[in-house]
Amino acid sequence: MPRPQAVDAAQLDLFESVAAVPAPAAVTATPSPATRQATTPATALPMADLLMPATFRHPRASREARLNGHIVAYAFRRARRRSIGFIVGAEGLVVSAPRWVGRGEVDAALQEKARWILAKLQEQDERARRLASARVDWRDGTTIPFLGETVIVVLDTRSTGAILRTAEDTLPGVPRLTLHVGLPQGAAPEQIRDAVQSWLQRQAKRIFDERCRHFAAQLGVRMTRLSLSSASTRWGSAGADGAIRLHWRLVHFAMPTIDYVVAHELAHLREMNHSAAFWEVVRSVIPDYERARGTLRDDALPVLD
Image (cartoon, rainbow, N blue to C red):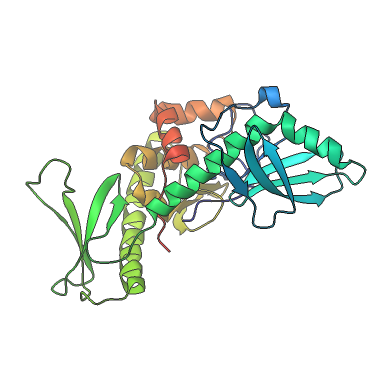
């Protein structure tokens, strides 16, 4: 999944505080990290310094600034707003300003936010490097994460479909799981990807169904149906009618993380909000849910496309 990119302000997510929220008809769960926008004073923002001079360039850059010795070429646009706004996304820095604000004021605001801007640009660069390293090279011997473990993909024409095998004796650091896919060595990357992804989705449905039934019994709620999701903005959702949707790519994570998302969604069948009472329901079955929540926020998923 490429990770979710944006979330509607009306949606609820797993990273919200425990403050009470009005109950909607359907409650949505975890969005992945999204583009962040700066609106608070620079003194309230995280600080970071780059050790070496660097250049950050937005592909549609129309202006350039030197911030703490670093060159930042940014996209500039006029907007119907009351103040100067900064957005640091995957492409770089975008600055928006009202039509009545002059260039000098924009430059001054950039200098005031310099350390925050540089910190966020550096974070985006690091994230891009992580994504590049997480891109799966679909071939014999490639690896994918499954339930928190590394699985080696083996092209094996003797196998029918895809079969997971576990080695009894392996060397330290060597994955113990192999997924034997019934394809020839010359199979196209797209064939390998589709076969592995299909297997992952089948495992996701089986595992999620089992865990939903387990936690529904513990929480005393009734799940009416379970379906897999490929949504670009959330890990899961719960409807007031008892319908649960879970993103199939949760199957990459270890069971404690999956259990947290499952329990989170089922807890909404008792508390259709993210109030303190809701989090107590979650904690009743997942006492250390904060740890799993952090894993969802921080761990990089493999890039399958």
